[in-house]
Image (cartoon, one colour):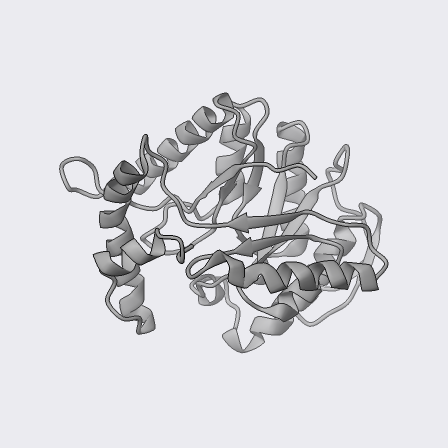
Length: 282
């Protein structure tokens, strides 16, 4: 078993030293610079999240990852996550196969349904189709991963008849499913033979242990070989824990309260933050 350390970011819009918001363009450039530094110090993976709202700058992770690929040597390049439900599996596979070529085999993709729903109306999808969109498109994507001509028919995109997709990768594409808390999603990852990424956003990390056990049991029942498991947890890097807490809190509070007002969450404050960064938090 190999333990690797990675970083991920949504390209969060933060405030500069003068209190003003950093532009989305500068945030994207900063993300590229941060990934270059991560590569230099030996971090194994950088993941970029896809969002379509003002609080996050990254809407097209693979383009930013392509820029990172051109300036790095070893760090693996992935998403955190790609919203498969509102994308086209064929075009998505083509883009990541291209990224894999540019990066000499370092591309990875973490597929998810998305906890934010802005991409659905933006790209013309109905939320009532939330489940079928992901299930059908995931099935097609895993077929495309075999890199053979595909014949497919469903309800969420045009049918394919012995269609071949290019470019071909040199050693296959590494793919994961991002899971936020659904046992059904864990079983789905095993059924499709995909690695499992647990997205721990809040609460004790050990509550996800049953999902790890379920994933192992599901793979065994399917007669599959062991696959990789990853864990995401919010964090901020600084010289000391205390410095990290003080630097992270203002932006974390602002973001949580902005999103919380939309979703009906209770106000986020320092007491809640101190709990979240403690032993019982994420």
